[in-house]
Amino acid sequence: MSFQRSKNLFKKAQALMPGGVNSPVRAFKSVGGSPLFFVQAKGAYLKDCDGNDYVDYVGSWGPMILGHAHPKVIAAVQETAAKGLSFGAPCELEIKLAQEVTKRVEMDWVRMVNSGTEALMGALRLARGVTGKNKIIKFSGCYHGHADYLLVEAGSGALTFGQPNSLGVPKEMVTHTLVAPYNDLDRVSHLVKKYGKDLAAIVVEPIAGNMGLVLPEKGFLEGLKKLAHQVGALLVFDEVMTGFRVGWGGAQTYLGLKPDLITLGKILGGGLPVGAYGGKTKYKKALSPEGGVYQAGTLSGNPVAMAAGLATLKLLKTSSYPSLAQKTKRLALGLKRLAEEANVSVQVPWVPGMLALYFSEQVVKNLKEAQSSQVELFKLFFHAMLKKGIYLPPSPYEAWFPSLAHGENEIALTLRAAKLSFREIKAKKK
Ligand SMILES: *Cc1c(COP(=O)(O)O)cnc(C)c1O
Figure 1 (cartoon, protein in one colour):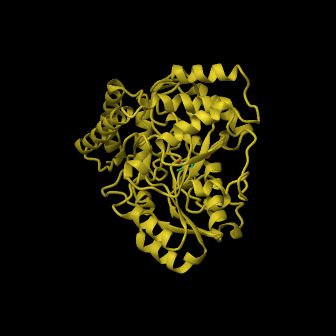
Figure 2: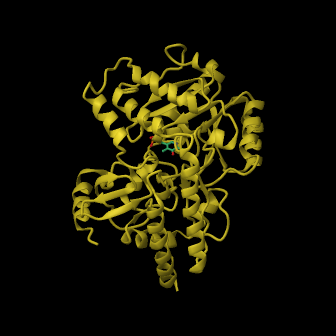
Figure 3: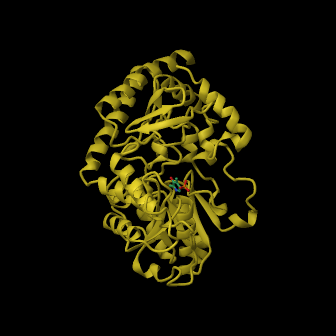
């Protein structure tokens, strides 16, 4: 297996782009080595520029739940693009996508934007606007995009780089951001007691996918809702990752708890840049042009992105989710069993469509525990799998995303590679 062309391209890219990439985690910093450059993607597979094929578990970091290049999504994009890329004015596809979204996710209205980052910025401005308060509580290891005041103990790429607080963020920008460990209701209760008067929102990933995969403990999210409402703050579920993935209605229906505001992204655009936020009718009135909370976007709601999202959602049926859950479970349980057979301690938490692999003896409940897993073993495992044609997220703090295009065959290939890889890393560690 040669990676020579990728290596050559990476050299060129590094001269022209910081780190050779347009988003940090792609640079392979946390696993070492040189990132691959891809030329094509189809179904569960990626092809790199050296002609190697991989079973893909990155799925463009979440959007590709149908698998890559689904013919119906591609056709919708092509047909729509031929009629114009963007009008900067209303089009019917915006309504159609909004209908599909509100049919699934319990929200009365939706505002489309161009990324998850923008969705969070909009939702939290709205929460501050309607409450007239300033502070927000977030959780360490939760990633809510790269806005200044949200890059505090953030997950994902910010974690990989060991620098949770970015340079270039003035201290004043984060004075209203309070941070608690995930699953630590006592800490939140303490913060609410102390700062409740000025608390606008508690924002949380209801299933945390930016520090691997951490599930909410029983009562945690219910507790957050109660505490937020006690002081007139809003509960915001960041479902940019979990929306349309863990179930038909996202994490809020999967877990059976309704927040006040919801953010969406990733699958919503089916591979094109779309984010969204929304909630109950009473908050709709506060948002510009109906109300005084401003937010806008030149390309927001453009027909091509709306068409990609609409085609993707239409192909996601209620019956898709049991099948996705079944695949994820097979993969997760298989990985756990094979690791045990090789005498390697792992945790493989999973929910439908998402899983993570921690080299750890204990269940991971928060960021600190995620960071105390054996990252060195993950690096070895990552490269062992890559050489066997399995493309995993290049970081121990990112979730894996199996898609509906991953069949029995791909899962068997993955488990066969994992069996060998666990043995290899065990031998190396001795
Ligand atoms: C990916 C992600 C974001 C940011 O979305 P972008 O489109 O990358 O800006 C925000 N929140 C969560 C939970 C995410 O997973």
